[in-house]
Image 1 (spheres, one colour):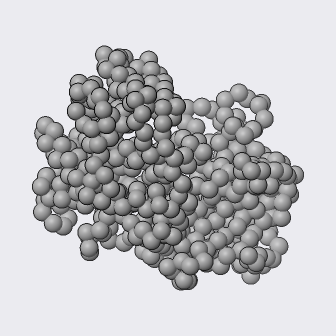
Image 2 (tube, rainbow, N blue to C red):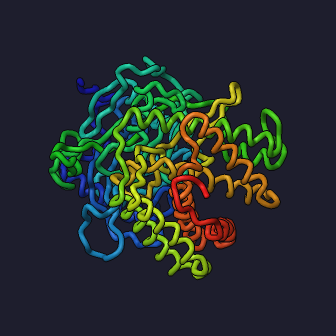
Image 3 (cartoon, rainbow, N blue to C red):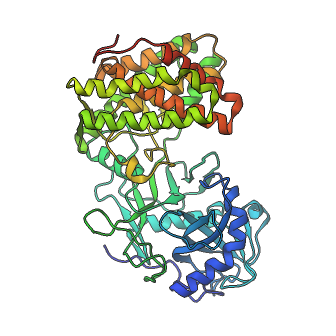
Length: 517
């Protein structure tokens, strides 16, 4: 891969250096601004713990500010920084979260960029300039797309294209717009044709949201938009203070000792004219479905088609990537992890305690089945499947799956681990319960109908989830327990929704074999 020539290379008005010393100086000058700005971002994962400092991981100048031909033009800095939290004075280390920041830099902001303002450093390389969220500036967001159009390198950053991509070229001049509803990442849509997702909390290793869609594209599965381009940061073991060409670098190695990249962003086709499953479910509950029959019967047909789509994706992932067999030791480990999460949640939420024994009994069934010789297959799965992660295209009624990142709060290595497909199925079944609660469905008929239809659609292309009743119930309980803890901490008014599921699952019949009771 040849190096990509920078778009502009004249001397900036106030250069931000890429060496280790200048990177530390830059981050030190930005620290007071970032300590105030970063916790306010929806994607910041360390809420509730004070920020006590930052350490540079990589600093790359994508565009110098104030070029000779246009002194007032903005610059764009790409930063990877470790955010130190907790004990003041402790040096940043591998356990601290690493964040990807895109900082615009210019003398003064026009009015439309005022909400993106971070501040003006009082010292350091950017003293006297205004620093702001670069992705909010259409000019700088467009620059990212230009970088992705041609594979190449800039300092520690590598921009890549799929060799046999279905989209051979990325057009120029596509107007960007920022999507503002996300929590863990940031995305920009270009000309309603492509969507670029930027991962904010990053670490060494391929992100599943790049790895799995690429694998599915190679397997010929059209249920997931295939990556068109992506970019990564190189890691070389030099440590967080080592200097590279164009920026400092982060240390990290793969199990075989080879350096691992960190996935920073993925460009995919944008499914214009599509509706996510959550919106479609609520429209159905309100009797205002956008297309097709409204009401429970209409959504049951959609849920059945969605189940088939999920089954197709699971089959393709099992063919494209390695699978493993869960035997007694693995089932014992799975049950123990679920039990630990249950114990912690019951300790924190007293309302869960009356159901503790019955729920734990379901977990303990898994090792019992393992001792009796029962096994299950584990494979790569979506990992965070719910109605907000699926899109239905109005023109043809086709379902697609998106956002294969998994649960961002979990370690990357855990998210890349093979797991039973029951986890994805359980996530979708729980999502139907939430939709019914938000949509004001009386009784459980709507959710029950959606759950049944989804499993029927899945069974038509994969296998009947009811054949794994014990495993599916354990994963449903595990998900509901997580929801209980989350709602108790963040949205107490919503706590009755997962507690209703806990009561139902705790009262269910004991499953004693591979088939449903």
